[in-house]
Image (cartoon, rainbow over all chains, first blue to last red; front, top):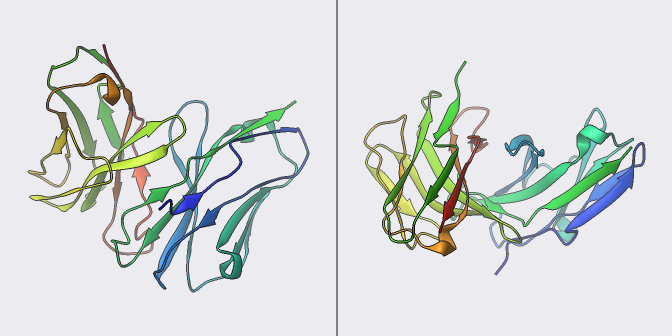
Length: 116
Length: 115
């Protein structure tokens, strides 16, 4: 069963628009971790954020914010006032304590294109 | 600065050949991982290691092997390359504890083409 679903395959927005990337996860574990990674056109994977299952507090970092809702098993990522440099593929990932908290299950990614 | 490197960055090989992709990290991380990235699949775990002489199979391990003889290196071997193994391969590492627990640091990737 797919553990992480990123239903949006591709999204295009005009610069300065806000955009939300959806991530829905599935786990039976009570202790788990959620991640977002960014993969710019250059190809490397850049860590953005990690949340554990006991911390539902939303987080804001500059133009980035994350909304973690256990009730809907979602960990959505919002970019405010998007910029061309935000164009990338974004991956949501899950690790579970019972299957090895070091092992990540990745979603299929959302390709974001910001049009100038 | 500590880093994780992969070599080669690009490789073209023929079906049936043995291929080894190198991964080297200087963070002294215990945990190392190999993933493949394919369109429509995201990143899928091939093999991983939690320390020297420890290796484990991931989701898509068939046709691949790894060995861990030291902390810094986790080479990935394709025993007999197949066209289905054409992909981009990423190596990653993570610490066993501390504030960066289970955050994985990725190498730049190796693009492998099997003809």
